[in-house]
Length: 131
Image (tube, rainbow, N blue to C red):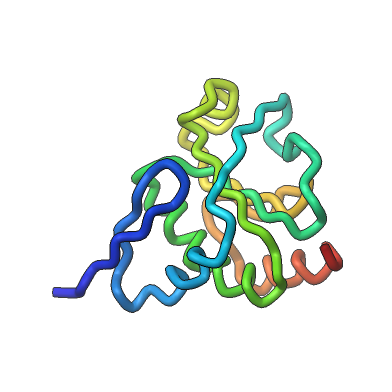
């Protein structure tokens, strides 16, 4: 039976396998998530920087956990900032995304939905330019 690691992110907790190396990465990232709302599913509200990565998620979303594990090493490599947003905390976001998560933005551009293609995400971070 694998050993589990308790990791607190934002306003809810996650349980990750002890060999989950991304856990160390998230300790170094900002954990404060701002709730945002807007009208288009394909645009990221607010004014994020070019390498600010926004992950729209909710507690218990296994696809969200998988996506976060995939992007964590790239977030560190590129010096990006991860902002995790729990859509259940904002009625507008809950209506906009519903069960259609995870959705990941790099800056103001949608980078992935449901699953992350690592090579494509890396290219998108490179194209986003420096912070």
